[in-house]
Length: 324
Ligand SMILES: NC(=O)c1ccc[n+]([C@@H]2O[C@H](COP(=O)([O-])OP(=O)(O)OC[C@H]3O[C@@H](n4cnc5c(N)ncnc54)[C@H](O)[C@@H]3O)[C@@H](O)[C@H]2O)c1
Image (cartoon, rainbow, N blue to C red; front, side, top):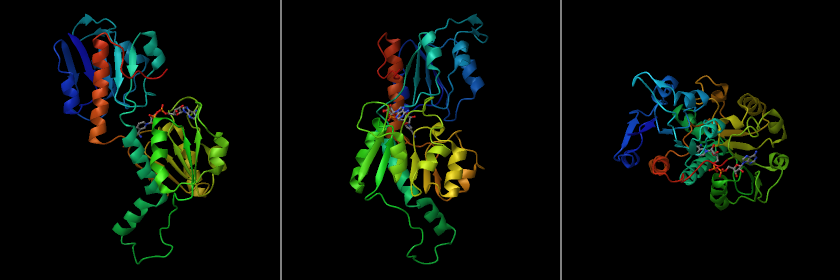
């Protein structure tokens, strides 16, 4: 029997794809992050792991995959062949350790691009037009009368928008923003696209949207030095990974007025602590990592992860291997 372990309850349509002769599926029944010990306890003897971005798959987990299974009371072989993460980002998986063990890894690119781009535009507008602050003012009884200058925000029309990381999602965001009358777009990427240096992007843009992967090069890149170069009216939006921004420096930049506002769909750590200073600021909008949260997209992502696993178990190559 081939054993597939799934760290969260998948949508019904995706889970059904796994119902095949010869496959023993162990799927958790809940939608909370699997406790680490539970993952370590369940990984021994598995042929495939379907995981989420909240599951750190490091050397210890991979070692455990091939260790003695005390419950079954026999030595399981290092049988793990494939890890399919239900996410675009794969910074939670130690790819080098996987390579050493011949374990192939897939992610779920493309299927979430539109949903994330849509959410990023919504977050940008919520931040630049101060939507949360306004809605709270109504709830709190602070809406005294129509105000000529009350709760004024900034608009996209005639602005310069910087896209940091012009990949799938970056392109989809730029495409959507075109109809808002943006004057010009600046792009920064590490691949060959018409682009500007990061310095020019920082100093010239009214809006900067981060869409790059979290890598050693991008970790903490948006820090005090970067904020000092940005325009005071700049609105920064991050729907990529929290680790790209130094959040302590961001807090200072928002308080001092070095930049105008920030919209974050991702934070470091996640979830953000309830008493995080950023949550005290009106010019910071924080969402709980909901970029791809539509039922349609989540089902497509889960089904793609399942199909990656089925392909490997069938001796075929991955449909969407992580880029190396
Ligand atoms: N908020 C969410 O729910 C959500 C959902 C999906 C993806 N994401 C994040 O968004 C990221 C982008 O997704 P995508 O599908 O567009 O991926 P992608 O690989 O198509 O695009 C990422 C781009 O970043 C560029 N890049 C990498 N390092 C860079 C650097 N040092 N400087 C500038 N550019 C750099 C890459 O060249 C690439 O073009 C993912 O890595 C993931 O972390 C978040």
